[in-house]
Amino acid sequence: MKKIVLSLVSVLALSTTAFGEDTVEMNSIYIGIGAGQSYLENKATDEEFTSAQTTLFVGYQPSKYAAFEARYSFGMNDDYDSGSQKGIVLAPESSISYWGLYLKPMYPIGNFNLYGLLGFGGEMLSDINGGDAYQVSYHYGVGASYDFLEHFNVFVDYTCLLEDNQGFDYVATKDRWKSSAWTLGASYKF
Image (tube, rainbow, N blue to C red; front, side):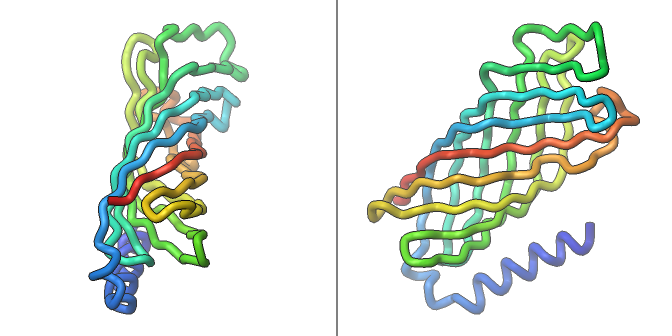
């Protein structure tokens, strides 16, 4: 835990001090939308929830090497595979949603940007066995974007939302869970 916090602070400090000459030009706010898929898997039973996702986000970019981003994603067309858990029936409205707050270190190469996502957030599995299950964890990911106009870009990224966590709220508390998402989308920079 301390190593992750120290790593985040180090990246933030380096991105704002070493590249401080860009902060005046790059101070910008951006918004975006994406579509993708999220997965939540019980590693012990092969039980898996999948969901088509719509992601909304807003960010602040103080330099061309770093940004801060907040995301919210909600699921549609969810699917459930019970794995070795036979006889489990979920409500038809069951869905996966998640939110995250991220530090986004970036490496620009011409019109391309390679980036990482480091932060934390929460994930909710709604209407499972008559209630909602909610878990907060650290998130990390990688992605790439392409600036095709002055204010527009397209991106694709992968985010690990939950890695080898014991239990998911009150659901299967002794089992190991993993969750991830990929997103394809576009953003507009003001």
